[in-house]
Image (cartoon, rainbow, N blue to C red; front, side, top):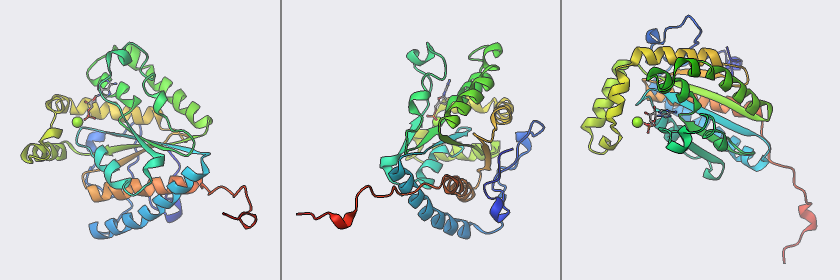
Length: 276
Ligand code: AMP
Ligand code: MG
């Protein structure tokens, strides 16, 4: 299991997952590490946002470290919501989102990491992967898009790929936003009912929903096989959006505090310069 970034406050704001965990039994409405009410979570999230914005400004100015944030979830699990709500207020110059959809012909005719690598963060950047190379052991496994003999080797590739990124100076955090099947039903229905959200309704999601149990196994295996100190997974109960946002914000802020980015020392002595 990953090092606990909330250890200093004695709180763990995610659910531990190991080889014996059934994700079907994990409570998507849990609020680990947060005993309080929704209102105080929202307040705390705002306090943490101020710190996130400050830390990101330093990361960008320092331009020596990089942060990769991987977001995975079932459809309607809240990936877009986290990007919109947790990252609002940061300087867009230093933050990018890479979205991984169904692969194109060109992508399918190469190895599955080919389309991923060009999007990893450069010095000073935070890059958020909205879906990622993990789809190649999730949707691909559940729908048998390639034979098992091929996808089962990918856990090794992914571990090595992430280790290489980490060895070369990239900090990695991975979030699995966990909702229950019932919660997904409510969210899909809400999309159908709201004319402004109908565009988000994808009939393909209903097909995938039929494979819920297989997805829960695939997520569990992906997490267990690739949870490493250099690329930890955090399983966040995500039925309650206020909790989800607080927990993700919390982990991001603690990760950035550990990176400890600093504004570069000036290379000039301002006292010696006169602007004419
Ligand atoms: P969305 O993120 O809701 O716009 O949907 C993107 C769709 O692309 C989802 O259904 C994903 O499962 C699918 N997708 C992403 N990566 C892959 C992949 N490597 N192979 C097959 N489908 C994928
Ligand atoms: Mg979708």
